[in-house]
Length: 393
Ligand SMILES: *Cc1c(COP(=O)(O)O)cnc(C)c1O
Image 1 (cartoon, rainbow, N blue to C red):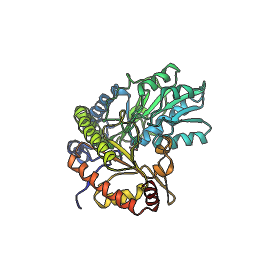
Image 2: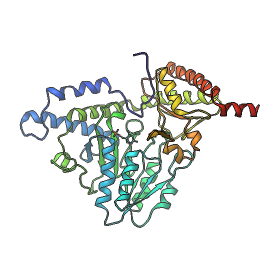
Image 3: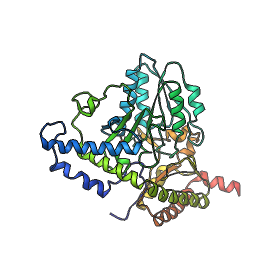
Image 4: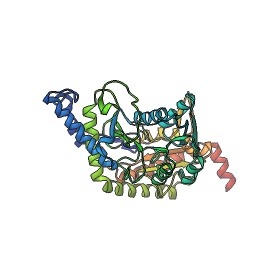
């Protein structure tokens, strides 16, 4: 394989070597089932406990309030479906936003088919869900609010503490999908008024297929997965011990490296943004310049088809992403970009780069050069652009 530049860390990340090392013994040496009673199994049980502690520390929670799941999507499904079910006698209205991950959006759509009513809040043009917008949407029968901590496409970080405060004042449960934020920015469930929080290991250099749900004590929701008594009777199924050990190690490392990693990524991010906006005409940055995940860069280029741009970048060994969804052969513009008010033709010319700790300035410089030349080439073949520029001359 030729040299690859990976700028898609919001999609997934490589497992850190230390994480892999921590996991390996739990496949074929320390393979005991944590539920068994002999001493050999207690090794696995202790490993779960250590991992739970590390994940809890990353979000300021108590160890006993963290439950392991089969990923971020499962955690979102569990939080939303089971809160809806358990609190339905109080009401059947849920508030979320138009920019959530599909694990939240499609779960809410499913609940609408089950007789619940859902309000989808529109963010402002920077992608922020304002406390005023939330306040205005609350009804006497609202039981749950689910707003993501940070957006996976445009990187906008939400005013979670304030949103949580409003929910608390109205005695409404507050869930946040923190999958993109976990390990990237500091989180504290108590200080931020969070009742339920979803996380996923593979977005912070842990393994795929492991996640967590924090549930504040006092919230009585049932399990999503019924069966054995694992996870204090709240999530059945023999624990993914190696995966959970990996999640724990990744959480521990994320906590100790957070400041250093975030400083490094922010520097590259701001350099990337500034260089592109200066060098490439008809380009814009999507999302909030300030309240933004350290590694997120999202541009729209006028007169460009984002899918073509992605393919041409791929031919240069550059991995990036567009938020567009390929549904039945046609490309729909990203629901997030549409929600922040971008017209379809601009949204279709959008691309996301998500920087990780191992990326270098040399790589970013290479990407900027390639972007510049590919965009010039694509525009030179675009009759709309040709007409536009000849008119403005
Ligand atoms: C990746 C992601 C998810 C899904 O997590 P999985 O572990 O892949 O199921 C949910 N929400 C957000 C914001 C994500 O970025």
